Length: 73
Length: 478
Image (tube, rainbow over the protein chains, first blue to last red):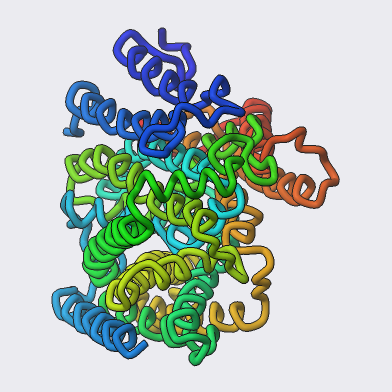
């Protein structure tokens, strides 16, 4: 384990790697290209999707800071 | 116009008073003047990080770009900026900790000390300074544009820019980091409320939120889809922007320096959690207004003026004045932080200790010089046809993003060497210009993404090829 590069996921943080990389991949919504329908309050669905995804980052950050980010001694 | 000028005068006087009050509360130590003695709690730290990052182009540039290319502008700016806050943990937490333990004041100081290299320290500082000065000038340009617009071209934009820079200079000169942080809270609240009020009033006066969207959709449906107007949002450009902010934003010296000012890790945690919430709304509002302009037939002379024109036409005059002051607050909060961080680096990282002047006074002299320099830059170099965003993306963001691999290596990678870092920065910067001037092909990506990739590659290869001989690396990485 000592020889692993510094950025390599460990058992303790692999879930956060999955969540953050997963969120990043979800922002590449290439399936939504060339689409503007359906419209929600006049906004295309992909805009609403990105808005919710951006808010979801905050929720993930909250749990990250509560469960993984330990204060220094 | 009189309403606007009255609000501006009251607002400017308040900022100067706050700067003077901060001066009275600041001890005559370098750490207190430049870093507010590392005492910013969650509220001040969050607002100062947000207000510093949201600038003239958050108000004017976003709306202008959305007017041109559509809702995709929200995607490339909003999500990328929100997820960038993970860097408050990856970089911010370590920088804060090392700053507290070792007494670091500036970003180049940490990087230079980690590798025992004065050359690396100077190069890191040089890049930060060179790419921040044009960005500082754009804030003054934004102020000038706002003042000229509100005054109906009675006040020339250059005079507006000079006047605003003068006020910024005064309160930074007096208040240092404490003054900058306190005014950022006021400016942050002001810009968030101004943007919220603007979008609500414009929507109501067009006929409602849905009606505004529908009218714009009927006028130009291309703006509601991707690739959008001018086929701008191609998938590789989308990917590039999502990645760019993660590397670029924390490398702004004014953001990097703020990691030192946190009182504790709780302050950094709160800032990280709140950041995406504010971004999700604040970045959407100007984009909405820019797109809605199509529905109501507003045609601006310059795209960056679309927001002021919309607010002028669709809100009462006092709301218009308030919103424009909010836009001024956005750019002033960025400019004051840039001014302070630049003067801090130049006074602390350059060998000026032989001069018989205190470091704080050298910093103050530099604040004066930088203010004058940015005014000169404004007068000589401004090319309005490029738009604020165009100028920024072409120079500042790419240039600073190249510093990120070195910073992460300095904080985490024990095998990194000064040679690897120096080569990474120099070759990365050189590559930006090769891509920028089409000497190398970008294959649809932003040149910054190639430059980041090249700088990582060079750093890794050169670090493995050169021996690590820095004595304090282990200690810093523990």
